[in-house]
Length: 220
Image (cartoon, rainbow, N blue to C red):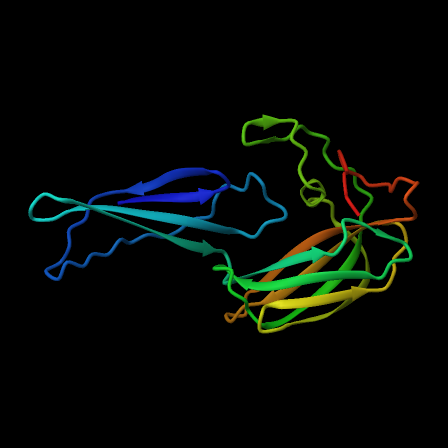
C-alpha cells in the first residue's frame, strides 16, 4: 500500500508497506494524517487529501489493485468568504456571501459571527515569492497581508447558515481603505474555526487606494 498527500498539484508518497489479510480477507492500515507543508498558506483551509493505493495478489498470483481517497483536516468544518465584488466604492453597500462546509464539502448549517477591522499600518515584506517553481509569482492580497495585524474594530454581527451551508453578510458603506473581515464558527466538538478575507474600499475609480502590499490587481 502507498499513501500520497494530494496538495496543490504535487503528490508525495508519505508511507508504504506490506500487510497480510486475516482469515476473512480483511486488513487494516493504521495511519495518522499530518498537515501538509503550508507553501500557499493564508487564505485556504488546513485540509489535505490522502490517496491510498493497495496492490494485492490472490492465490493464483493474479494482481488486484484498488484506490481510495480520504480527506483530513485540522477541524471538522471550514468557512468560505466570497465578496460579491473584487473591491467596493465608498457609497456601496457591501454584500458578502459565506459558506459553512464540512471537510468533504458537504453543507453544514449553523451559526457564525463576524468582525470587520481596519488593518494596522504595517508594510508587508517585499520579498520575491516562489510557488510551484515560478519565481516572482505575486500571491493574492489575502496572502500578502496575512501577517499584518488587525487594527480598529469597525463592526460585528452574526451569520445564519441555512441547510445549504450558505449565509449572507451586508455591511453599511465604509470609507476608503483596506479592511479584514474575520468569520468564526464552532464545530460539533466546540472547536473554533476562523477564516478571514481582505476588503478594499476605493473612494472612486480614478484614485489609487493606499494598500501596503507588493502588488494589487482587483476587478470590480
